[in-house]
Length: 344
Image 1: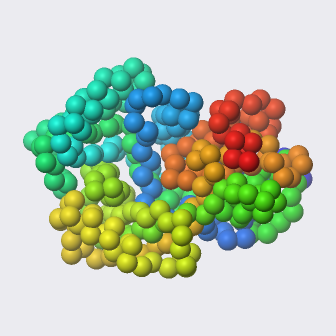
Image 2: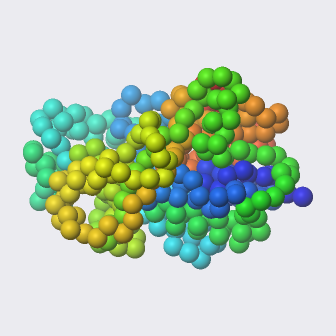
Image 3: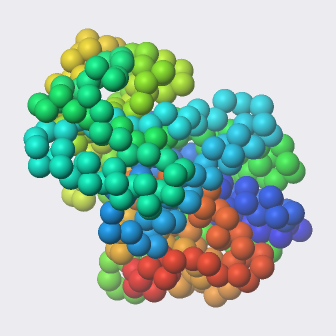
């Protein structure tokens, strides 16, 4: 017998399993699609914070997770004896006009209070920066030291390997034993929507690409509404689209080519780099837009961890921590807006 069964081997499911192991529980992770077989098997991996203003529980939760991520992924790597691909390398954003500069300077001040000296939001001139840079009409950029990056597939592989190294099971099929946590992404949101007769959550298609271009020493870049994320292995990920309406869940099309053109316009050095892979997949988005954490609204006695649309990897370690506390100790420290009823 195991203490906890987690249904889903994406970032939420694996993070919950890891946190339960950390608390001394025995765990089993089951996913018929394998590790990172859904949305967590993508390419981009931009772990970027909300802007430091209008603070709320969701932003604080994400902040705590981003701060905790360094130690989290270090421990995972130590157990797995694998590269996790995590690095807190920061994020660079060009400032388009004087209004953007004024706003950025104001946020630099609020970050001092809200980020409590654990990270910075800086306004920098071009001469203070190195490496391939996006064009900036003002010659100024925001650089924050809180953003991190990871290659989603590699991170999930390392986490699953670490779970197995600590005695956990990671399976494609098996029986539920002990407490059950559903972290099955789009599948569970569709099941909930069908049961309640209204949209509890939905699938949002995303498309991204992986380029052979070595920027591994530099920060990730957000420019022209596109994420440009250097990875540890000398590749760069570009993404992504957010499509509520689509014909083919796994197919890439002209929308991805448009994203690539935006990236080339932002960082001209990328043009001509070999495109190693084009990826498309469905990401789970809860109706409330916040993660859905807590008691499962449909399955008696079970729990749910879902809806990590765009912020799943950035919130993963904190999601694991609060879910393990709830499942194993009955301690609920989950923000109220994350409760499943918020999406019903």
